[in-house]
Image (cartoon, rainbow, N blue to C red; front, top):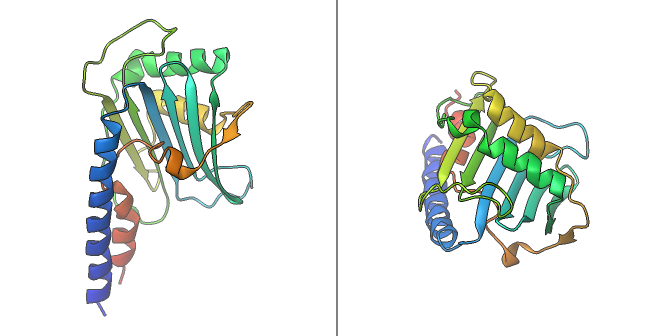
Length: 199
C-alpha cells in the first residue's frame, strides 16, 4: 500500500517537470510581457465570488489576461487595464520594498496554504522606464499554515489581484494563451507530499 502514494508523487513530479520545461520555453519568447502574477489558496472559500486561484498576465501596453478559479468554475478574460489600474499596479511593483522581496520557498503544508508568485520584465509603456535586463525578477512566497505571512508589499499586490475588476473584458480560450500564470517550478506538489506523509 505504501508504494502507491510514492508512485503518485513520482508520476506527478515527472509530469510537472515536463510542463514546466514547456512553459519556460514559451515564456522566454514573450517579448511584450510586463508581468505575470499569481495567487493561490487552499483554504475553503465560502463566497461564490471569491477566487481560490488567480493569475494575471499584463503586457507592456496595458493589455491583460486573467484566469480565476471560483466555486462556480474557471473564467478566462482579456481586456485593457484602466488608467487607474495601470497606475496602481505600477506603483505596487515599482516600490522599493517589493523589489527587495526575496523568495520564500519553505514550509511543510499540513492543512492550509496560500502562495504568491510574480515574474516581472521591463516596464509599462507609459511608466517610468526601468530595465531589469534579460532576466526577469521572479518572486515566490509560500505561506504554509500561516507560519510565513506575506510581507506588506506582497500583501498589497495580492489585495490588488483579489479585487481586480475585469471591465469591458472578453472571454478567451486556454489554447489561445495557455501561460497566464508565472513559472514557479515544482512547488504545487507540496500539498500532495504533505498528505501522503500522514500515518
